[in-house]
Image 1 (cartoon, rainbow, N blue to C red):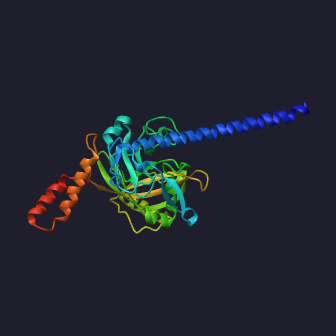
Image 2: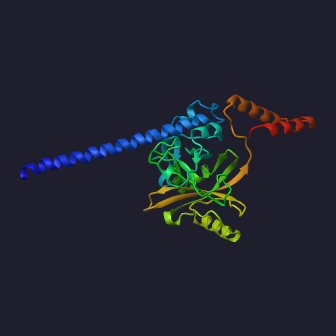
Image 3: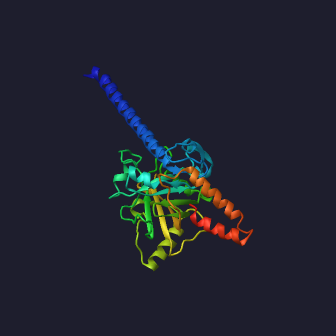
Length: 316
């Protein structure tokens, strides 16, 4: 029996190594499939700085150096970075997944993703936007929230992926230097768009996550003060009781069941969503007209009138 012990140990170790390699390969494959899915969705988005048209992959999907501030020091991390507010073809995206309710974009970060809303808060933890099962999941709105993003507190969830995708970048808001350079964004929806003004970030246990959606006036005022006081960053922006608050949540590994929370005020503005029939040439033409009208606004009253009329017709 003793003669067989080394053989048994070798077989056990071999099995452990095989299982480990298999699991690592599975994880890497899912990372690759998840990234491919969301890279392909960028073809339904027009970025002004790239002049791409829907259904055309451009250089925005190639890797670019992003600056992360781990432990207070600048380090380089390779990830897609988006610098200009996109325009989204929601009509086409709804044909892929009718659960889409918006698109979140945070300037100069890798965050430029569709937001979906499921019937529960479990499905999109392990399903991509195209509904294929995958550990990357999707960025999703709390199932109990209004898809119009008009609640007082609007929780949106996403995984902290080790390859830097999804909401992995959120915990960088622990550092003031990162916040100072990445504090604005845009939430685009089929019904209207919002500026994002980030003002608070902190780590909390999952059971203490700030997920309450409905408040009395005084209660909401107290809640705003509380989340502002919890913040590890210093922001000059202070939301009012009229504000709707976007609450971004992702896993954090500071302690067991930790969550990293980023709060932002939503500031409504108007924008006509991109349709399948629109092209980048249409948008660039409208943009050029708008810039030309604005530059000549002060010359004569008649030109000013023309500018006003043209601006009203231009996609913002």
